[in-house]
Amino acid sequence: MANNLKKITSAYLHFLKNSISSETEYRASFIFKNIASLLWTLGGFFLINVIFSQTASVGGWNKTEVILLYISFSLAVDAFHLLLRDNLTKFSDL
Image (tube, rainbow, N blue to C red; front, side, top):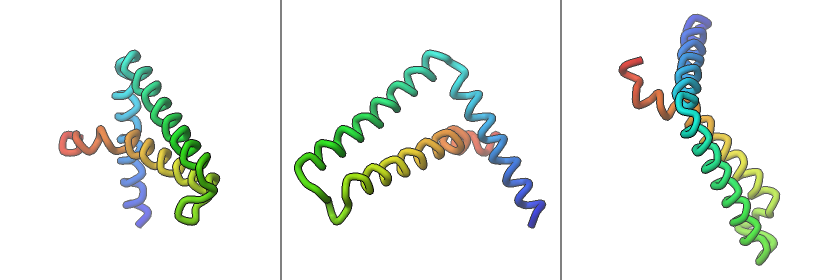
């Protein structure tokens, strides 16, 4: 069991190293991707503010709960992109 966990941890660390080196290979692309991600995040917060400027809750969710849900979703998507997106397409080669 511990040996399997060690192998899985090693694979994820290799994936992380590969993703970071791939993302930072071209500085301009890295900067533009981060700017685009920031704009999408700000757009999401703007949309949440527009919706909750008209109502106090949506489906029983208040503004704070929706913001926390949006942050959780954004972090999960970013973690997927950082760790797995590029690596899954190259998995057979790795």
